[in-house]
Image 1 (cartoon, rainbow, N blue to C red):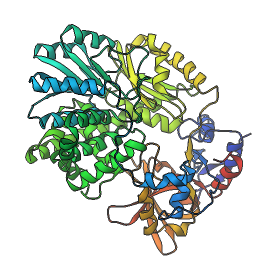
Image 2: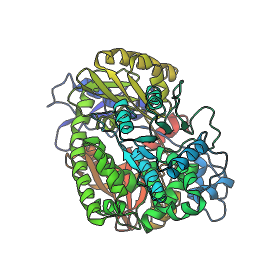
Image 3: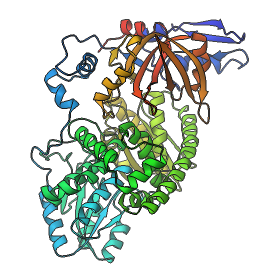
Amino acid sequence: MLRTSAGSAEDGKPTLSVDVAAAVRLGVPLGTAACGAHAAIRTASAHTHDRYLEVMSLVPQRRWIIPRAVGGDAPDGIPSLIAQILRARGLADPDMPAFLTPKLTNDGPPMLDLDRADDRLRRALAARERIVVYGDYDVDGIAGAAILVRAFRHFGVAVIAYIPNRYEEGYGLNGAALRQLAADGATVVVTVDCGVTAVAEASLARELGIDLIITDHHHPPAVLPEAYALVNPRRPDDPSPDKDLAGAGVALRLAQALLGDLAYAVKGDELLQLCALATVADVVPLGAANRAIVTAGLVALNTAPITGVRALAERAGLKLGRINASDIGFGLGPRLNAAGRINDAEDALRLLLTEDQPEAKALADTLEERNLERQRLTNDVVRGAREAATAYPDGWVTVVAATEWQAGIVGLAASRLVEDRGRPAIVIAIDGDEGKGSCRSISSVHIAEALDQCDDLLLKHGGHAMAAGFSIKADQIDAFRDRLDAVVRQMLDGVRPVATLSVDAAIDPDMLTPRLALELAMLEPCGALNPRPHLLLRNVRVYGIRQVGADSDHLRCKITVGKFTFDAMAFRRGDRAEAMTDAGRVDAVVTVGAGRSGFVELELRDFGPVGTAATFASELVTA
């Protein structure tokens, strides 16, 4: 059985310690909210008065997957640790140079219908027809729409961009908008980051005399819309090689075809930085084409940012010349997304299109205010979603719903639930008799395919492997929860998912130097499927530990190794400050980066008592 032992903190309060090895042998998921040893202790503490029992455990949040050392000399010019990390991630030695120095190419056959879309747009431009770019309200849709509008500007044509209001119109194409656009004289509508599921809307567009060109990257349904052109690399019959492009990446390919090589050489830098914003913010895999797009886009962004991006970076406190993918993911992206989450995305689109510096500054200030409001609302929804999730401790997928949650925020709460429980999560905002749900998933559950099996219970749905959205009648939510739970259980073959953390390499603490940070920077840009390396440190001293953040929910400490002292941050682990102080030394999985001042900084991705790494290495099947 899981062993716990009574202990005593220095202040005399009773505590519990947890036998990590026993938890691992039993296969207990080591999550944070309602999993594993924490769940066992919390269950016990629910029946014991708080004065007599307080949880003070350093049990790690996740199960660490520790690789065996992969030997061999590193390829010329590549540091041995970088080669070790890339080998652990499955990359062969001959492929390493190309991965570390990605180059933009457009090899292979084009996406299906790309030439047809290009031809129709050229005819529309020549005839001065009214063209409308119809985007989505997240960074991918906004930046992708801006890419096409800027491409059309090269031809001296002012093209209208339309972004639906999340709260009034919902996701994707809608009939009312198409009718209004047709009444305004539009004859060609080009979607960005939406439309692949719009079967009824495509039929309506034909009735209205609109040639609908769909560009999208989401999971296609069994029945595709009958549009004039449907450009999506995920179409079953699509021959193009780059299947993981963001919606803006698909729009970029259309812009390249439309502009031609000469014009694209002039416009490419501004379009690539927009595509880099979207690719990172939409959390698509950063391999192959996406890695090259983000690399080139970051160079353009840091050397010649467009007016709106410059204003947004300055408002976010970022230093041009040093902006990386993490700065997009945690700085620029959330501010652009905040517009559509709180109200509508028009200000974000205007920011990415303006050439007027005072206007850009005013818009950046507006997005900053909305982002602060978004943060406050997120905290409220996350607290409510976590509380609601306790009613479903045994579900294979977490599905929670409430009327007081804002639809633009629920996706962020779903992400937190996935972090907490290590299983797919869906958070639904109910408005009247209808709910809007946002899904986040794990690598072993393709959530868009799971939704396909619930199609009869949903009004509308779409997405991709790791994230999706849908609309549903409120009285169908319970039936949907039961159906999806069964679907996910089947997709997982009845084996419950366990939250894991893959370690790229174990290093000696004395390897933590500024030089190491420079070597690890070779792996940038980092993001989905190419995360910052997770490095294992054994038995390191931690001190100066304190809670930080508005709700004291983060933890900051110092780590000294030899003559170097590092600041370290553990996000959402503030409740373990006292336990870490008592321990004094820990095993930790960290990422390494260069801080604003140029010094090395660490992020503690997970930590546990000394011996945790040895336990995981001996008790688990290693990678």
